[in-house]
Image 1 (cartoon, rainbow, N blue to C red):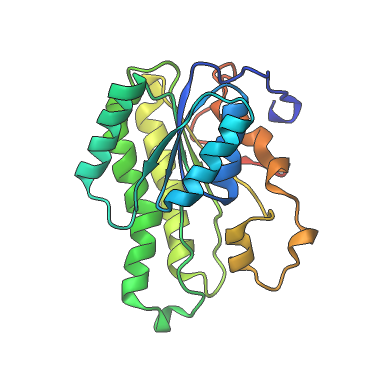
Image 2: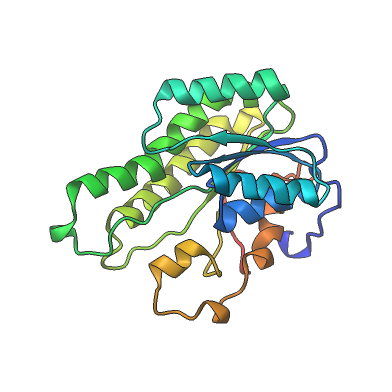
Length: 244
């Protein structure tokens, strides 16, 4: 059971995990947590200085040397993802995990007023980009040991969530379809609902909330480790709550 899970110090030793949105927030903390438990982390994001900061933090804490892969998901083509997968294979030889964490909020506005270009941007980054990245990386993952794909899932259906809410609902369905298709191919696919935590995205989404009143990101990392730990034979196609 996840509630009883205590990760071993070397739970992710010799594993390669790609983390999108690794420059800050949940992605940054997850990358550092994976490295602290032995993983070689591929830091993917669009802002180089943020990725370099996480790279330095991992090295200073004695983790395996990470890799930096700057990529803007909004403008990346399928060839960019294919090239990335080829680079990971050539440089690291395997890919045991992907954490799909990168996302953008878009606008908090009624559907009737929603900007069409912004709608397309949000759907692309939050839904189409994870699809293209996953498809490009699957051949390499399927030759690697105990591959795992995990999505950060903040599903909302309230007014004014617009493209973000739609993209996350669609991403949940994508996760479940992918899990069902890969169930007999030894690829574990799950999503994590992090709840409300003290992150930059949460601050933007709920500017009226006091950050100090929210739990810090580190408090939910056991769930992110659980989803990637090869010793845990978890079900696939599940949404794991990080707050229960």
